[in-house]
Length: 147
Image (tube, rainbow, N blue to C red):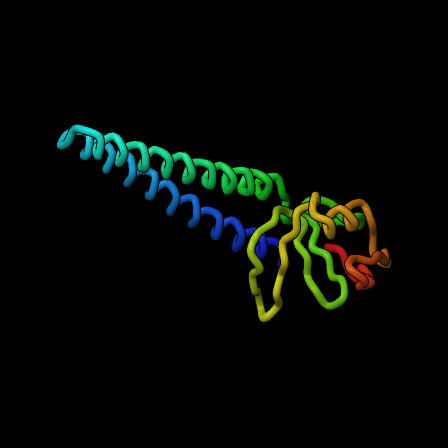
């Protein structure tokens, strides 16, 4: 199951990477075409706006590439007894994937929530084992399974 979780998240990130690269490429092309055909204040403003948009997209792309780098460090064949990067944790009927803060996914009718080790929930879990109990926002969590 861990392999499926990892693959699905990697595919989601790769799809986002492709979209952002296409958008950045389109803006670059538009800027080059615009540079050939016009001059003046409106032209400068348009180029400036395209440049700002390109910077925003590059920043988002870098965030996604950083998330992908985290996923690339995970070996899905490793089974864990202690919770670490790449662990899948069952607690309170939830499945948590310790990786990066990524969208919820569903595999075989099971919802998997990806959490960063730096998040409040992830930091509580890191280094602990089955049977570990902790509280977040008034809710008591009990780790039932780690794989």
